Length: 347
Image 1 (tube, rainbow, N blue to C red):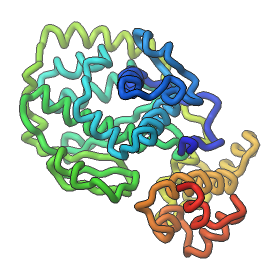
Image 2 (tube, one colour; image 1 turned 180 degrees about the horizontal axis):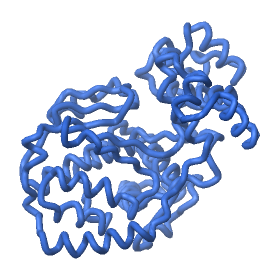
Image 3 (tube, rainbow, N blue to C red; image 1 turned 180 degrees about the vertical axis):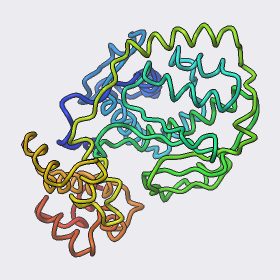
Image 4 (cartoon, rainbow, N blue to C red; image 1 turned 135 degrees about the horizontal axis):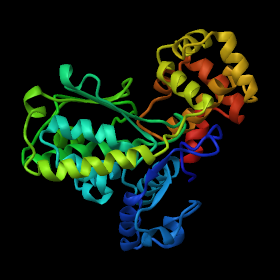
């Protein structure tokens, strides 16, 4: 079955991301008896990545590799379970700056500040960390890039790292994820120790103020001062990736699909420009707002149909269609068949 979430609206170059966890995942898959051909099928990296010291790859390929591994092992919780036992020290400088910080609050803020030394793809929002205890994150790639396994890998991994650094079972007050999940929710809630919602507008954790102020058992003021200097220097040398206009439009559309507000006037206003300006700039890239919307819906529909937990009416809603019939008509236009028949054929 082809990997999901790799739509043709991808920019020529996806943001780069550290690939150390691709290494460990590939090693485990090979140890389980899967062949190199099965493990690295159709990926731009192969067995040679296992010997690289600081491997880097495009985030879209890393996320797709985690999705591929979940399909290969028939384990829909692969990402989350691997995050539970993730060894954060494998990411090097970023980890050590984080764990040598004074408190949990500082740990999160420093990971957010210096993330560019490890990734161009990850966006971390800590603007409401102090007043509401809220940590938000996302990836600066088109919504067509399947990333559910990697999002869950990162989510359980950051909680595990905080617990390890504080020697305390910190539990968020709540957790939210943008992607859908109707199975194994109890497993996720059991590890995190809090209510979890899926299919929300953002990926987010909310922490109690008392937990954010906890000191880290790994804190080291001298080491932190030294590493912070290295991190600042590395940050200055890291050229941030800029998202293409199409990627920005896709992200704005994806945020508004289910609410029915994925229209050009609203999206252009959110991007700080007029609808006419957006149309002109998209024309310069040989595309239109409707083409982006239509192709995004098509790619997301294929991804959603691969999830047996989502009913067709739910998919129609998530894609912003006013009725199931409207979704059926669009899907027939894209594929020549109905979504129900397509799902039956693919399973």
